[in-house]
Length: 487
Image (cartoon, rainbow, N blue to C red):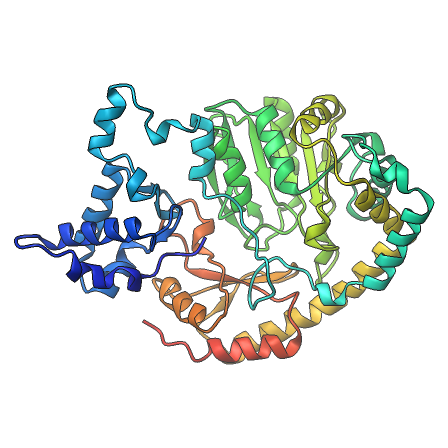
């Protein structure tokens, strides 16, 4: 979600001024007028108080007081670790007069959603980049995808079984695709499963939402990596769970077994998001043993283990689980292409029936044609060949970006960069917002590292996606970043 620009209301500071108004009142009035005019739409993110204070030459205390006032009036919602957002348009906001009318029986706008629904909206959602841009994170190279081969496989499927592919499908997924996924995971990731344990889904985010719905009650504790994947945080927070952030070091998540036992533990153990560290074998075994003794669940999100370039990936956590406590999830959005909308979960046998039933309630099944073509692509060996080619391609681009960062961006320090589709870099403290605004003005995306921390003042940094970019595009974008002015 894009942050609202200060220029939208700077002029309103003077236009709304009245005799005797202080700076706080003037800023509040300017923001309200911007909402009434539509310049600030519902859901727009406001700048951080420190940033807005600098841009408007006000004290941070003044801006903080203005935001607090607008929050009290119902115009703004503030989310820890994410920022401040326009809650409602001014003409429908829950101003004091509206609250009085609500007390007399009128429907208050904030009552339109359930508590769970409002909680989901308050998380800010999960939006992925929809266009090619340096350095949007997490996107594979679609220009290098074997489009002709995919088209041929699609045509063949439509020629031989068009009617069958137009019918409703199995909520668990096509058997041929589940078999191909199981064989791939057993051979490449050390997962212990059969096709009967595989559930085909539209996304790993859907898997997280289903798991949150079936496994968590409001108030249940969930251990989360900090920093960590925002989509998981969103799914579990929306369910009403109590998120317990745990730090990450060079060996992955640092568990604290003295804490109250959680209902669920979320991990990205092979390539921790976003630091890139691998969860050590000792901690893997300790966590699996703990989950079995406490009766809690572990969700292993193996989002990009197919793209590790230095050494072999560590076998899955699920492969260590003898007690049926680990759920393994993966996706084809990174290995094939995002709009395919196919992901999967490998479930303990006891979870298969309830998850399949819950999945049927959500959206029925993944498109039959997409499943069939993906199954053919895997069974005929094209998937393995594509992964081999992409590893070589992405590794060369990672190496190029690391070299350019070292030579041209000495103020950006890469974290563990052994694989994946993006590089995490740390920035000088207090510089992320300032540098990101300059980069955005040049048309360069610099996804925030600090926003992945549970605390508002997380470590400044960026996640620089490189996999989808040609070498010349990487070089051009780094050259532009090298010209940024530091605060």
